[in-house]
Image 1 (cartoon, one colour):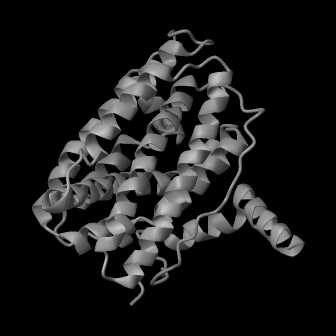
Image 2 (image 1 turned 180 degrees about the horizontal axis):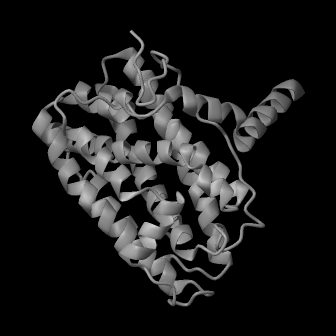
Image 3 (image 1 turned 90 degrees about the vertical axis):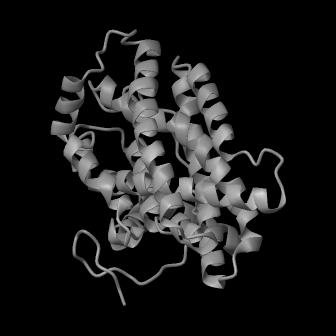
Length: 306
């Protein structure tokens, strides 16, 4: 039976997940790609430093889980998830290179992220049952993170205020392409965890730890680091609750209320990611994304040349 999203529109039962070989030209990306909004710009820029590390480890861990998947449909979904996450890491790494070229050095914070993600996702040389149990825990952790990224993906698809604020269209396409694919594959990590274990406690405990940790690292540590090292504002832009409230009131950042509404859903015993977000909206954006359409055109030309 088709599910209904929070938008109450009829959603497809299932879609095939495919990696889109997208490319983004960031040569003209301004440092503050939301004009006159350095705090909001850098709050979103933090993901360029955080997500590639996480996504590369998602790929490694889910690749290791493939031999344990007995359901062929789930295995197909996991393969699609792996392909999409690998592309996400590349897109954000390209954006980060542009920021570095403009004098914004992500070095120390990026190194901290690499250390943290390796701590969470490294297999530590384990094997046998111990490695399997760690893999289950990592699938649970990824499921928790994917609940948050799917929320952010749905938010950016709806954030028309970013367009009104004059945000750079190439960066917006990156964010919405990524966000749409996060919505598109939002159930995969959860379904993998359910397949491998499915225990309620082991699902929600990592979420209770990862949500406040991500908020702290993303907003407090990451955004402050970027503002401090921004060669234009040179630490003069203030990161305080009032600044965040003003930006969220403009619609260029999620509101506290939107975050509060998102947070407890994952804790519900009958939770499933398909109840949150709109697959049909995500697919519609991916059909019109400039980068995704260019990728299709390149594939068509390459196929025609053979």
